[in-house]
Amino acid sequence: MAQDQMHQDQPLIVALDFPDGASARAFASRLDPRLCRLKVGFELFVAAGPALVEDLQGRGFEIFLDLKFHDIPNTVAGACRAAAGLGVWMINVHACGGRAMMTAAREAVEGAAHRPRLIAVTVLTSMDAADLAASGIGRGLEEQALFLAGEARAAGLDGVVCSAREAPMLRRALGADFLKVTPGIRPEGSASDDQKRVVTPGQAMGDGATHLVVGRPVTRAADPLAVLEAMNREIAAARGT
Ligand SMILES: O=C(O)c1cc(=O)[nH]c(=O)n1[C@@H]1O[C@H](COP(=O)(O)O)[C@@H](O)[C@H]1O
Image 1 (cartoon, rainbow, N blue to C red):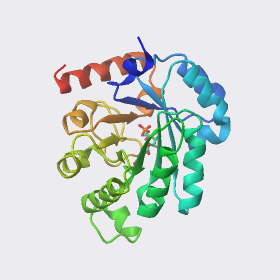
Image 2: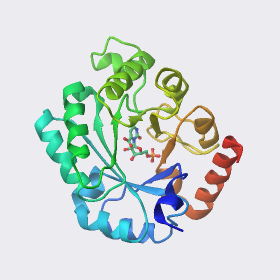
Image 3: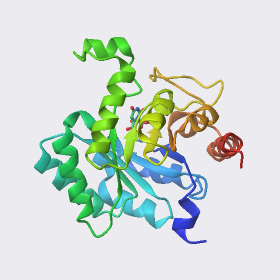
Image 4: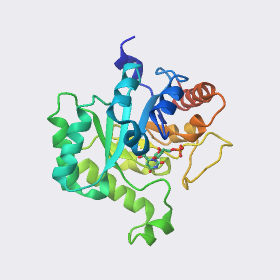
């Protein structure tokens, strides 16, 4: 099966939050690219760099390079261009960097030979209303997520990272095609860890999430493949497929 065909309907993204390339490679060898994409974030990218991304892609995994760029437009555009050059499937920026920054990011990836999906982080799933207020934001949680998602859409981005709890509201406001990548996913009965807004895989899909990011429930599992298979079954049931 062509890689594109294999991946196009796969909503699960496993967060490879490991401290070094060796641990990430060892863990990835226990997974199957037909069951998930992989997310490489700050910790791993700083430790292991582009070579690891290329290695994982060589094993058939599509990569979400989660570096959450947030800087002046010119700097973010350059970072996005460099990330696109790695051939990754998806990259992201922080929506609170502003519309000009997001527009510069979008123009940079549009000019690249390989155009990754470009999405923006709205309100982190580790934050609740009190955290938002404490960081000086006057809007409520949902209002802020909706505002930032609207800014991302106005800048021409493909979607947002948001809590699945906000997905129904964002689907109503911005449509089903605007990507809603939702971390804070926890299968029934698993620990919330530091996530304050958690949702089960089935519930997230039912609520309009297009992709689910899940880390520790898979990376700390005794049998990660079994957890992925169970999550994929739950997703298929929620989609009615
Ligand atoms: O951008 C992200 O991926 C992200 C945004 C957000 O609001 N919340 C959030 O948890 N994440 C990422 O999603 C992953 C969640 O991991 P677990 O909490 O272990 O499932 C981590 O890699 C986070 O960096």
